[in-house]
Image 1 (tube, one colour):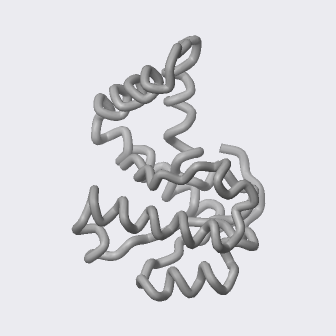
Image 2 (image 1 turned 120 degrees about the vertical axis):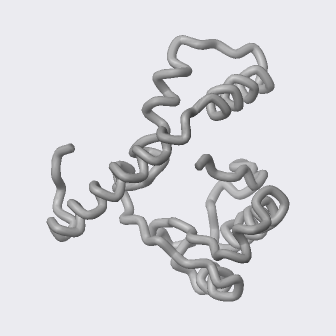
Length: 146
């Protein structure tokens, strides 16, 4: 399932401080409330690495206050993140060679691509990622080839 756009402008908080993370999480929570209201009642699993803003007291208190479960992600391990592992490669191949005159044209193409993805695309990617995670656990975090 594609992530939710919570309206975070990277230029607004370039240093990604704990306060910026809290603001971003507030926006994400509001976006979830609007776009997927049942998700807040069922519980949110939030994945992030152990970067200082993510492990800061302010961020941890925010996550505890709203009861969000944390799915830790090892730093510098993009192949263990669902988006890097399965989503970005096919998307990059799809967009390869395309040029967009406006941001709206790009957004339209992205929406079209996501709308036309088969449900199995995410199921296959998630199952493959679970296998990758298990292999990483079995090897105690040691590096391995695909």
